[in-house]
Amino acid sequence: MHPDCERILFTQEQIAARVRAAAAWLDRRFAGRRPVAVCNLKGSVVFFCDLLRAMQTDAEMDFMAVSSYGNATAAVCRPKIKKHLFSSVEGRDVLLVEDIVDTGHTLLTLRAFLRERGAKSITVVTLLDKPARREVPAEADYACFSVEDAFVVGYGLDYAERYRNLPYIGVLKREACFASGKDEAPAGQAGADGFGS
Ligand code: 5GP
Image (cartoon, rainbow, N blue to C red; front, side):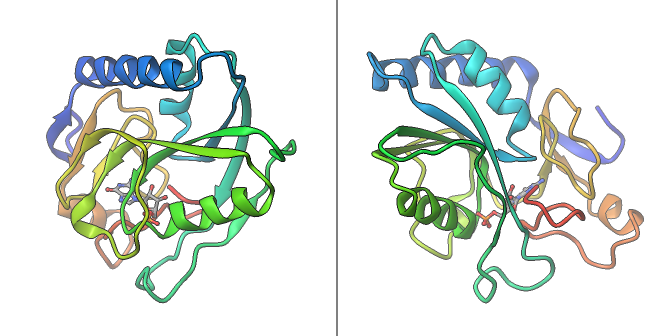
């Protein structure tokens, strides 16, 4: 285990099993259809790649990025779209792939964006769900894991652009947050680059 993690929440094997289950669920949902799978960068990218390869469905790939809300509380800052889609989703079935639904603001923003662009349907799959921190009504259709209110890293998820390559999902030690030069522990906020984590 990485020394900055206090414990492993989900092992590589547990993640792989949940990804396979999510892929099977999505294959049933999209039977006979060709959805556009949208990855919300950057935190979702590892999950996105594994999920799409586990699916039989012939899905197109597209990418978006949403700004983080920095140190402001999520309730007062609406996330902003930083990177638009490459292709049109008008009249298309969309599979939105998220890393975490935390306060729900990011998901609400992305759903509104995709609806405004004429998506025929929007299915949301998230790797992690933190229901205890929800501030707005935004739910995924499928969550691989429900997690407690702790800051987690690994399997694509970062803190200050670190830990994304860990093959498991771990809880970050509080000391690791302060040691990174930031003066505040994270509370669901994204990485330092202004993109969603
Ligand atoms: P929201 O609060 O809008 O649902 O999510 C905001 C952003 O915070 C998302 O990009 C999500 O990835 C990130 N986030 C929320 N909780 C965590 C966490 O425990 N770890 C990491 N690395 N990112 C998180």
